[in-house]
Amino acid sequence: MANETSFLLSVEGLTVSFDGFKAVENLSFYVEENEIRVIIGPNGAGKTTVLDLICGRTRATGGSIKFKSKEISRLREDRIVAEGIGRKFQNPSIYEDLSVFENLEISYPRGHSVFGALAFKRDAAVRDRIDEIAETIFLADHLDQRAEHLSHGQKQWLEIGMLLIQDPKLLMLDEPVAGMSVAERVKTADLLNRIIKDRAVIVIEHDMKFVEDIAHRVTVLHQGKVLSEGSMGHVKNDPRVVEVYLGH
Ligand SMILES: Nc1ncnc2c1ncn2[C@@H]1O[C@H](COP(=O)(O)OP(=O)(O)OP(=O)(O)O)[C@@H](O)[C@H]1O
Image (cartoon, rainbow, N blue to C red):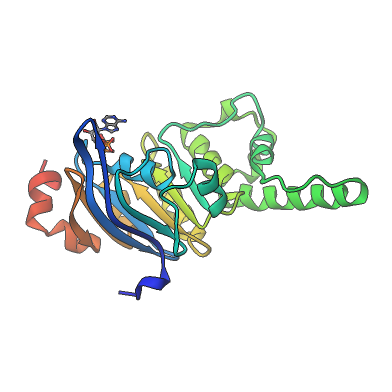
């Protein structure tokens, strides 16, 4: 395992209580750059809560979350986005009445306002970036299409594109292939394998075939704690994992 300073994300002793109930308890795990980490576990294990804690939506009761060696557990949600963490929720939150192009354009990170010739140059840069992202998410031929007419899978990809255009260094996805066709799942695996060249990805997933296709390492949660961690082969053969999750 790499030494501590090389981790992109270090979660240590993370705990959160809701009215005395510990949804996440003394949780530690580490994610490296260019890694695809999958979090699995039974319903109520605390998977979504962990992502909520990392993105600042829920405040930890204790422990630390370091991103690029910086403590982020006390930062506001928008500051955490600015640090380079993007989060996709289970249901796509795209603008149905806008085109694919406009959805991506709206998500382009806005810097200082510029005028005249500079603005023209900037527009060209935005268009190039939108083209590049559309290519990555298999929607290059759908830029003018209204988002409401996309398939369920295409909507999921569009939302991933809306996050990618902000160039996050850590992207977190909650069940990205739920409801997708087999062909769309295969393409999504390919998409994730391409985008980790510049970032790490954390995925919550129940579809074990998909987990096998993408996971570099798997973290199994149970009752707010890490039950098992390692390669898919390792956790699949861990009797404790079979007992509480895979055997069901
Ligand atoms: N805001 C909250 N207030 C009170 N309890 C909560 C809150 N958020 C989560 N919980 C509880 O914490 C536990 C963990 O929930 P969480 O949604 O993180 O599990 P999960 O592993 O993502 O489950 P699933 O696979 O069903 O999505 C559950 O018992 C849930 O009811």
